[in-house]
View 1 (cartoon, rainbow, N blue to C red):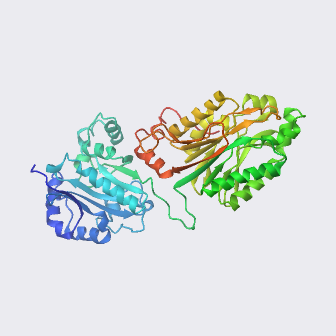
View 2: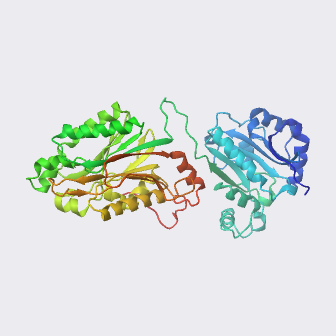
Length: 507
């Protein structure tokens, strides 16, 4: 190979045709007469000029990638090359389609080994992201299959290639470029005797794809979290407590936060007037304030244009059972209820509280979120179920009296961020309540955790409050970084799960 002076990625021009034809004939020597005619190249260039690119080395064509855009739903999973190309006329190209379909890609034999094919695929991926399309797809040849067809089915052959037991130059390359096989295509490309006329349907998903909105509202990608590290102190009545709550909502919304997170049982000071009662009676009296608190928080969410997570409060159900619940008060006026599923032994023994049953991720204008109250964060199955529903941010309102109790919540919450590739925000209460039984002391340090990879803090901590001090904590989290992590992270905790040997499901 002569010395390389220049490598250029350029749009294909019709002036390149004769050189392109010669390059194709050389690249497909095992498939005679396999080159595109001039009128076909002209059609591709006219219909989709951005989809037709060449790599030139020293001003000579070294490789080429040809593409069309299709409405993927219009093609059966068992389509052929003729089907997808409209019998080689490219009448299937649809500028309003949702997937870039690879018509052809090749590198001349003399230039193979320089990873030029990767450059062509990277261009296609970047084009897909720029055009906001759902992904890439194409039928990949399996040119070494003819050597094994008498003993292996196409599926068995593909499995062995994936396990590196068999080398297939085309399929190995596609898999290394983040394409995943989805099915075997029979009778895909006429004349491909080396592949026994089989191909593998390969796909790549654009993690940044956004469906076109029909409303003016959009989903935010940079989300600002406002965590309230709440000081436990005496309050004369509900009005005074909510006045303090509004002060914090005002403070975090003043920084244009998208969420305000309150701690578990932040309203416990209201039990001071019932200190003469038994603990079960006092907590049930506190539950009488819950409906009014939710109503007031919902009004604050609207007036301050912020989504409020109310921490948690006791609530008495219609069957007179006592639960630990909280509410998501969206800024559009809607509300959602969540429940603590695992109550602590102390909650059950002292207050007679029971665990709930509701577990779901909630849609917001900042993506999907999950909420687990305190002890629930120590059960990894719950957050994994929420992650399977598409959760990007997990909120954990908590209440711990000792540092060892806090450490359980803190370290489990950080583990949830790593294993579920999500952000986790925890907020707790500080201070003392000497006049409230079972709520004497509190210990907290509110924090925001991230996964641990190059795009995030090395220690997985985005922001942390001062321990045991009343304050607010503001932190920005980037949702697109999670998408990138899921696809390109050093490790892929969600994708690498061995679903062939275990599964997790909600009853």
